[in-house]
Image 1 (cartoon, helix red, strand yellow):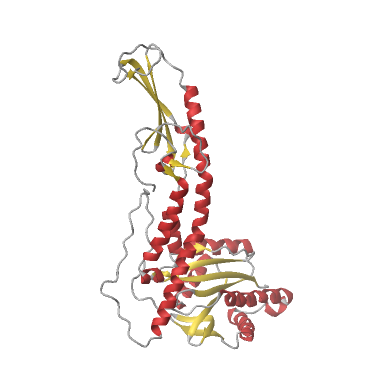
Image 2: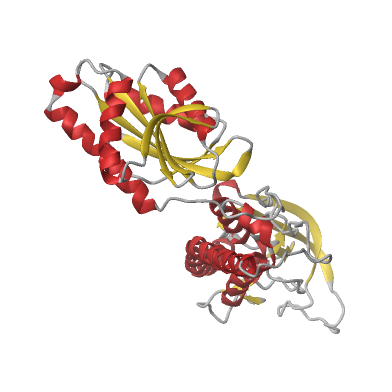
Length: 414
């Protein structure tokens, strides 16, 4: 992380400038994004690439595991040439006498190189210690005829070290907190630039041929961490832009659907005997009123017939399935059915669950557990809603083609 220097003197928190090192990490992350093969970048899901960059360029602060410390005591000759109480003719040569050596070892978590990094706040009397693998070592020697009580020395040294670690932590926390935004910005800036270049090239009317010396693969750089994050798998084939529906339109469609819940609550008798097909027709009427007749029902699409489909031209931009709640297993089959219909990257989808007679809490718990256990599940989206969830899944066979799935539960009168 910080470079290699001679640390044999045992001085801590003086070798590197932490602020410079943290800024260098951000620059290294931005450089990696800028040098990543352009098709590899465009074909990789943005959130997956961002998470990889966060894991790779975050800094793990030091935590001393005081509850696991231990001491090692042994009989050993000690050098007393600097002992002011002894007369020594030549202090340039070791003066060995019988004595004892005590080592106090404190395991730690975090990046060992941080012990050699100076925070913005520091003092002029840095502590001394040895760093051996994942242990901080405090070593004390004394002649046999002058044993010393080392416990006060240990407590004072650890208090000093903990103070320096505390000065580092605020800087490290700020760095780690800024990483998601910095990674997102770096990715989106280059994606936008590459897509704009691609569009300009397409308007030339001249065939575009890849240079022979252009990179065709991407090798993940070796980094110091024990468990190195891996670059998300993605193809290097030519990226082709695909249709995407704006989130505001997606939210508008969902609001129209959710408004139907109020209609059901206010007119329960009208919906008491309706089946899936009848309920679906009510949603289609409302959607067509807002999206100029572009909503269709029971439309053939990819692997079968989907319940609600919104199209822009010849592109499917919104797909929804309508299902009565019959338990987790049939709901899982509805997810599979929905995945069979989706063809485009960044698809917007929904599953409308009609609940008739089951406790709502039971239905919600079953939905959440079923989606998270699905093989195509990637992550939950923060979408506060009292009777619904939002997830990101990937299409069958390609983790980089993501679809948003919003699940809404509607109470249908018995």
